[in-house]
Amino acid sequence: MEVKKGHFLTHLSPEWHSAHAELLENVRQNPFTSQYQQSTHANLNGKKVYLPAYIPYIGHYYFEYRPRILCYAINQNLSPHVKWSKEWINNWATDIEHAYDRLNRAAYENKPIPIKPYTEGFIPLIATLATQRWIRTFSGNLPNKIDDVVAVTNFIKFSTANDASSSSIPNIWWKECGSLYAEHEIQLLQPDIIISFGQKTSLELIRVLKRNRLNDHKIQLLECRFPARIPSIKGRPLTSQELQKWNKDFLPLTKKICSPKKDSYHRCKILDFPGYFIDVISSWDCAD
Image 1 (tube, rainbow, N blue to C red):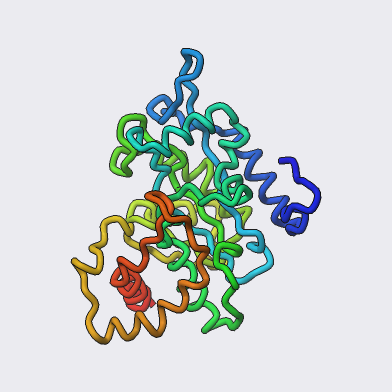
Image 2: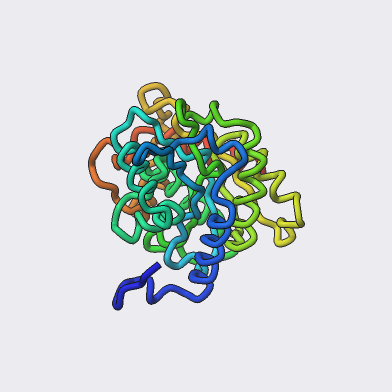
């Protein structure tokens, strides 16, 4: 990637650049799963151009901050009926290097990272809560912006062509994305905490961590339900005690999240689902 003089990338650590380069090389060598013909593609000049796998977004100060948190959403959800999906598919299909690094490129261009539970604020707030939980035990300070110190990706790097939902993912994609990508990502990024969204994601990450002794340095896996399936404040109103906790302990942390632009993709939705975060913290406490 070309780095312009004065661009913030010139100030990133050697560890960041090394991990970024090695992750890119891995997806260049392994751009597809064995059944990639089922995945999303663009039609350019009468030919199908399949979108390749991509590397995680890595916060600018990821390697300079503890805890290191790596977040896994479920799958790249490129729904063919959605306007922005069509634009992204065509853009990435005409620039494969951009496609490999689509998440970091979005951040460089001051655009939202194209992982919807990230842009909606679910993943950043969960990561902030996990960071707060960590520093209570190991000491430290919350970052100014959580976006600067986390890494995030999807476990499955693809969407099926006709149905982008997670339920449509072929079983082989789970196995191959674990061995081709997730295993490599964990080795290079060396997280202290992995946050997973969705039961299947958690199960596959457990398998990945058991292979090749990846968990020798005791990575903590925090499991979360997928936020889209959680009732909003209308369906899950807070009790008076929960509301007090939300206002005191949760709401101030939202200042640690970069504010997205106000449109249908970028809109922050965390304030509509406070019960989700209270339930997540409760589930973590029960697991301890």
